[in-house]
Image (cartoon, rainbow, N blue to C red; front, side):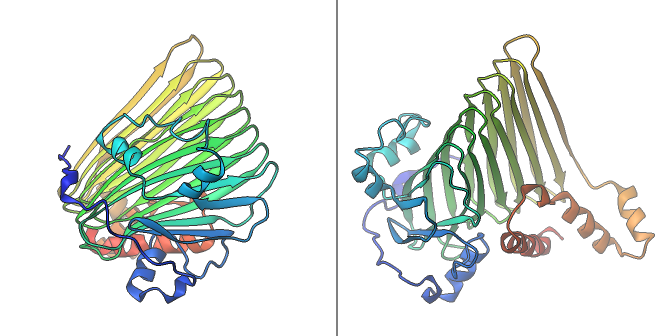
Length: 385
């Protein structure tokens, strides 16, 4: 993995003014946000949080039962968020967690009250605007018993060549019979260094679904979220769609730890390289029975590039049911010929197969976000072919 020198980035001195109306942002930035799944109009959203560089510039929610604020304000309001803050991620895990623990710039705190069913997603965006900037954020999400929430998080830079480092800590707490869908769309640039560190816990009957989409060049990204199913009947699902153009390096994966009976875990990833490197990891551990887990990693190499799939399964008690399927290869010629026999030329046939391979329908995304991702896929095709 490439070495990251944090001394190349500025972690102080980039405070921004508040933005009351996100539609007044520069058009180029609005486009970057839209392609990250964040709608500046707020239509179809229950709330919006935006941080640029070193501070939050916009935070609003109009959904009763949903509390959202800057993490620093939450730490003051709730006496340090005892029992939550830094409980799922070790602050001394590595140099990146230590950097955030020592100097957190912001991040969001979101809590859904017991029994509240939030129909429209809450959206957040973490934007690096100034060149050579390092951004330290810490997010905490709590979904109380019987509640449900969908969060759409977009992470991006002001322009494709903006140089920046994003260090992000996220901690999730899904209480009894609650559900959280967390959709992250990365729209970084060719000079972006990204180090998310994520952990979460799901209580009895809870459901956590994580959707992750990254289709643009990112210089260096490393992400490996871990979710622990701590209560009977808990469910965790990870879905990811990744494209690595030339110059991109993505070391990504997910881990599910089943620490209670009647739990289920699923990790599904689709990866394409058109010249970059993808390390696709997956780890499911089962420590109670009955427990069922499945890991599926499939990759396509279009032209040059590297995909390294690393599936791991670990059962510690008799009777667990764990399975995995991993495949890395190319588009089958017979599939192309089949579509060409039905009137498509070779490029159209290849494009059709790739679109099917990158299908995000299983993520259950809102229509507007799904449309934005489909647009991203269309733009990525220009790089692929």
